[in-house]
Length: 191
Image (cartoon, rainbow, N blue to C red; front, side, top):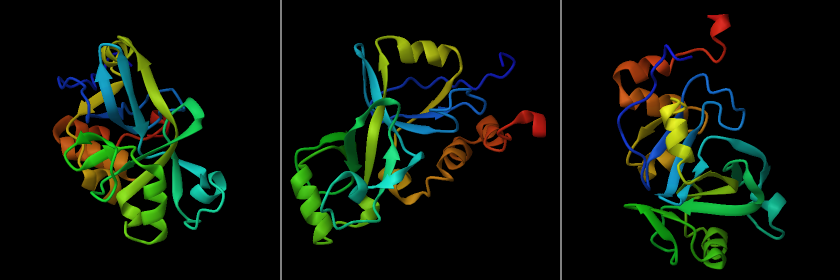
């Protein structure tokens, strides 16, 4: 759909959000919002924030008391791996993505503070797999208008916004033409 120019002029960086353009044909990324945890000359990786899996944390990890903790599909790469982001000062060892938002950390400590309810369930998210791009690949996809970039990500947006509304909310916050894109039908033939 070359006549649509979804692109903006923001360059991706660690902490940016990638918003899929409304008609992206890849089912892995249809109407998704991705948090970029790393972006450099070697490539990029991040997690899809709004694609809920059909499993809970207790389905993946035996003996976890948080049976209802949702797990998200972070992306199509290495879906046999488990990752997490959080906004807790009680957890050490994580990599800061932006102020107040971290990737990874001491997993045993996280399990402990979840079990003792020292951390609110709205302060962390688990992901199976991740989204990854080799060197230059993300830039090619940006040139093809597959993604809209915004930054920085905020912990409030990551954890407090319902995942089924996240794609639309992020576009609306960008305003202008992006607000209009947020209302595009999934299938334009049904318009």
